[in-house]
Image: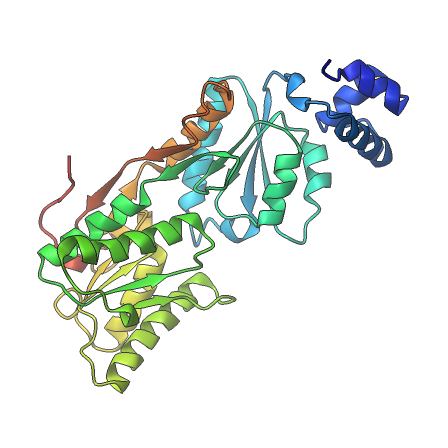
Length: 339
């Protein structure tokens, strides 16, 4: 016979209500009591999924490295879509930023969420803790085993960018990437390499560079571009004739480096970014980019949390479509979106 909540309460010498609060990570208990109840429940093999909680409070968890909306406004749009979807469904949203040095367990107890949306990169240790909370959880712009997620179609976006550059006669296309621990960046790098194979072109691995960790994002991208230029000149190789960067901020920083070196954009070197942030249209020249409905990511995350998890087992990863936006930085004249 399956272990019941009454069995856990009897074994832990607490009330059924205390067991419920402990396993739902709700406030009102000491940490010692909470840990004892959780331990007893695990020892007895109690399935906490039996505690069905009506979702009312939802926490949007964002890593500290993503919360500078002035520099990287991508997640501010995702958050807006998340908040709008919560309001439409009469949910109570809250926002929590955290990093590896923060006490996530304590913060989660204060927020007391019924469900959690995790946006962008977080460390595996944080994901493991979230998994242990046994709350409905969805990952946004992130993918990990055991979690449902909603992501951009990053590989398609990279493919559209590279198709455009190849069609305009560019063959030495460099890629400025970031940390491959980020799911979206790793997928864009994959799409970049795959595009050469699909086009029947040789891939030159020296044209792919990653930004240095520990530097501010714009300085890291500028440094990556400087390294591409320096390496080409040191080996007497031609410079790249185009750069596809993992996001718009990186593309704009790299483009400024090339202009400072006296290179013409797009005549000498073309640029394409990803995300279509407002600065992409305001740069000189305006930046070609891959655009995505960022608010749709947030809205879809809320929808996944409210869907019955058992019914959604075959839909572990939901993809949001992308489009290519041609602008002057690549000499573009036409949109090449595939149907």
